[in-house]
Image 1 (cartoon, rainbow, N blue to C red):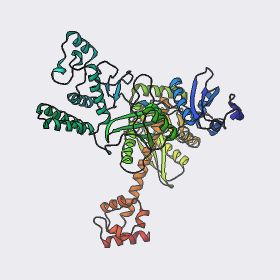
Image 2: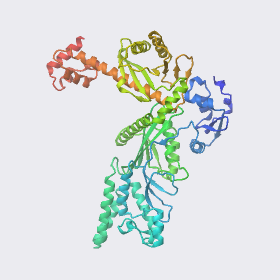
Image 3: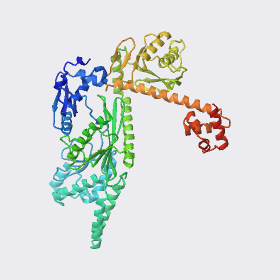
Image 4: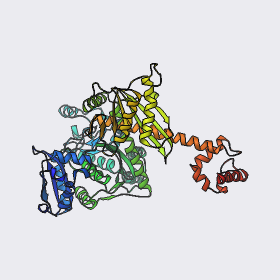
Length: 615
């Protein structure tokens, strides 16, 4: 199979030095950019047997017609060149994170002769210093309003500013003390720019240092009996402390770090970034990506750091903190730290904390990433145009006469061969119909036989002349969780039920390949397509429902077994189950552990232990 790739270079031609490689298609378009400590070792992995590679990697290689490489002096240079080429060529198979929403930022236009403070969602403005992102625009507007009392920087638009310059009359903000009025030279342009810098420094650091300095100035003014200045400084201190109180203190005030949590599944990934300055959370941000090639968490985090901190040539690059805390260390950690240190002009470290306050906050960031991933999937499912595209795509890919408006999916769950439960979930117009979900209790633990029995029980309602409220509609498409054996079991059930003309497919988990009834080959749907996303969503829902039903059945069986013990009622049986989880663990428990539970004494504990030891 390796010989199918006509452009494969001879192994001896590939250098062993560090470098960057590019896969190109027939038109010269760059499909993928990667780096390697040893080019020969890395590229040799691509040119093994195609069947041994991940399906997404196979697709990239079959789309390519050439591979080129560039030798560099070190791993760090390879990292830099890879970043540069990814931004220049935008290869379709490289990871490209994107914001899952538009966040508000607090911005200061430092390039202007009189810098302006404002709230914006546009990250592409040049010469602008950004702070955030923040989750709520009203919160940052309220914060800016408080800060302008202490740092009266211009916040008006260019039109208002130019009109004030022409007329020599400042706006209302100057009259109420929230603007130093550089438009009419109440403050010089250099002094106003210095004021804007102090505002930016406070927002960026968010520590108590600014308050401490103001308090010292207030004390000096009071000692000199300059009570008017002291009163103004007192009000400034109150305003700054009010702003600081709105930021949650999570770590030591000396900590400046970005904490990055990651969540992923087979097709998508999401990250949540907590921006901590001065020990306080100053902003949050979420990013999502549809995975094209199979990438490890370490790979994803490496590309994420590139996405976040690389300058884009227009707006100011995001601030690089002292520490970047991640759940798993990225590949080429040392080279990344050198690159980040150069961007910051001060040392920056990348670490993966395992215990303590930082690890706990990182765990919270990971939970937020899971939430972001769930929301991203729900948005895709709930979007009408996306659902219509998915149903139309399935019709075309599977060769159906009509779009599959009603899809039923089946899965089997059991625990070590016992308590087998089959699940049926229903999606109509791409949305779940939970009122029509069904579960089936089964005696066999064999997956294929279980699929056959479940479908026989479901299909008999279609073969009956009398309509059933339970299974009132004929499905447009049957989806089976599994591979060819499960598909053949479903086909056998259709034949034995006498049901003809019904489309059935199976969806295998490993490579997400689709097996279609009546064909001998598998169908590979595009990894980021809406049709594959819908099938995966339906399959995962069937799996979730099957597991939930199986656990409920198992819990009911355990409770029933416990109720056979003399003197044990339902409430105490449930208490034992919550405490020990299973009969096996309860058998291992001592009488003292059982007696310690509420409502249990030594006598009842001995009865329970004796009964279980005899069973």
